[in-house]
Image (tube, rainbow, N blue to C red):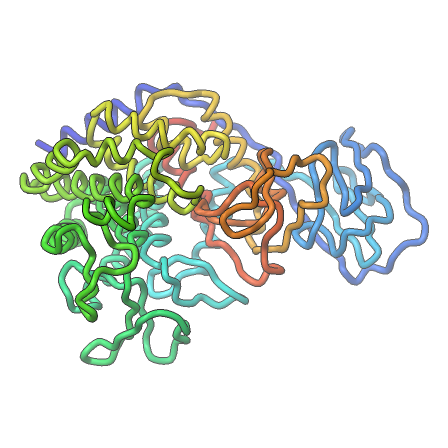
Length: 494
């Protein structure tokens, strides 16, 4: 009966919105010729055959108002001129080689397949994460990134009916669930693990399993718990009945009981002390954790709401009501301006991922008041994932939705982390303050194909970043918002 009620709720959420049909979008394609000899005489080329206007900039080139500079697009930024050897494919000649730039018509679903191919080469034991120099490796957030990927696959499975998406989701879910099993402590998940022969990161606390088959990383962060509970929510609702779905339910129960049994702390079994970020108690909020309290409040409420939904255990509902109302956790979650010390885009990610199950399972207006407070800053980011979650909670917002689609359209097909420098640009207003990492930022929205590649926990207004293309994102930055939007019928392909 509870499953049927959820299905009806999800259907209602889907039917409330006007679906925006999507046709093909032009996507930038680049082919570089770094060994091309510099030409002494080439055209200024003010207008191409497609009526686009090209001009040299202080660095790189501009097509109409769209910027092309840095290694993502050009061998180097000293542009000598232009030619058009093939209609619609403009050759940009630089002092150290050429680039051919053209636009290819592509639907967002075709673009999703492109990113899925990228994600498939990022698989390490079922985890989906970044790769460096073409090699996958252990990451502190293996559980979070993989849980988000698993959710994307489940949304694709349900909205497009693809069994291959279900198979990919199941593999990712098993990888995340194993993080709790590998520690040997019921309810306590590892950050990551490696097997003998894999390179071990130099930081953190690592422990062998008794049989020495695995070495796992401890001091688990709240990031990982948020990822687990997001996955528990989506997997319980969308996985077919069976052993894996039962495993999701039992793991969810153990993790929730572990946090409750330790007075709202995530206790490291090796030290007997709370992990650095696994702290959700009122004592912590009233002391050193005051700045963390709006985020951590919404996290714990989301865990409890999800655990109650997944297991049906009334204890979690009673605990939720005690914290939300008697202890004031919902008011704390909304008290963002008074409590937050600095703007942290990672906190925004954890908050919105925590809001999603709450918004699906509960109509409480107080949850939406807290969501509004968090969204005040987020609105200007034009983030398709956060916008979609906001629409799930607040109803149809076609302006936000069009911004989401535009951002998905402008995500670059090349997800290597090329160095991108925008601080030289005169058209970008510079914010008076540096960001929390001491980097310059702009007050204007930067399209994602003109800024460094980053996950949604990064600062989208940062002017300079990247690492020379030495690593590559896995593509979930597109897959999760796109398939969530498809699942909730915010958009659909023509």
